[in-house]
Amino acid sequence: MIKLKEINSELNAVEFIAKVEKSIQSTGQNGSDYLIVYFIDDTSKVESRLWNSTKADAETLTVNNLVKVEADVKVYKGVIQLKINKATIVTPEELKANKIDPDTFESKVKMDVEKEFNRIIKDITGFKNEVYREIALKLLNAHKDRYINYPAGMFMHHNLVGGLLWHSISLYDMAKGIKPVYAYSQNIDWELVYVGALLHDFGKVIEMKDKQGTDYTEYGKLIGHISIGSQFVYRTALELGFIKPKDTTMNEDVMKLQHVIIASHGQLEYGSPIEPRLIEAIIVSSLDHIDARLNKVSSELDRIETGSFTARIPSEKGAQFLKHKKN
Image (cartoon, rainbow, N blue to C red; front, top):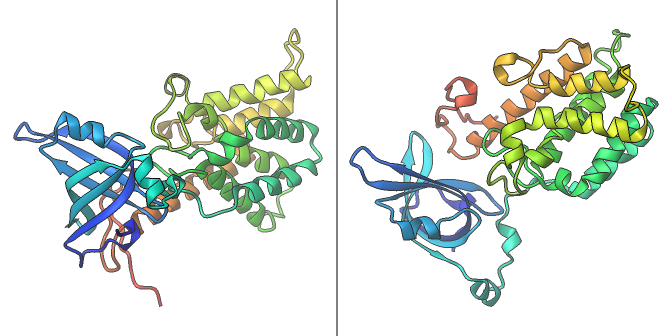
């Protein structure tokens, strides 16, 4: 058996056990059905095709199924793409007999999520602004399991177990890193930036269906993580007494935190309900854009060999990127 990361263009055929991350049924120009299947294990992921697929094939290659696969190795536009010849479901008994842990087939972040979560909780506890501090602590602690395990998306970026925490902490650490650079600006509320960075995608604890990111929930599809995140902040502010139910006066700090979340996509055409109107929102949306782009391009470069170009990346306006040699 081979690990997915070990598959390269010098191999003609491979045999491996992996989890079905995504399975998409399509129809070719000749009218025949085929499946586009993404396999994952603890080392990597790979795209595959099963031509002339049947209903039974679709059932075998259902999302989250563990399967044993026999496939030919192909290269399409510089990217490894497997041609599936045979796929069979691996039973729990087979896993036990071969001493295989099913959890090893989850594509996870390479970080200690418990340690990183505790780090940011400790930091937030020391924040001076009571509104930002208490809202963040209440939300993060109440939804810890999902926050540290859910992905940040299905396809776009950080789409692996723990991706939401990874992405959020990346923004948080980048914000802390640039603070000295902009020390000349006395107009930036850095605690608002930090909490905004950690909560900007918080709505994904409801938007995403599960930690594998197999689909969006109905609520997620209808409302979206940005609006869900803003609602979380408002309801929590009510619970903590920062907003009075019958008082029409809005708490300014609550409003600013909601704005940073709502404006986190930066531009209307990127799905942001409103564009940044606070300097802190510019910082968070800019860092979000950078981190998402770099993660997506980096993950595509990981799939190809040095000297090759990636496939076209829709989020980068269809651009292709070269994986060059490093000195």
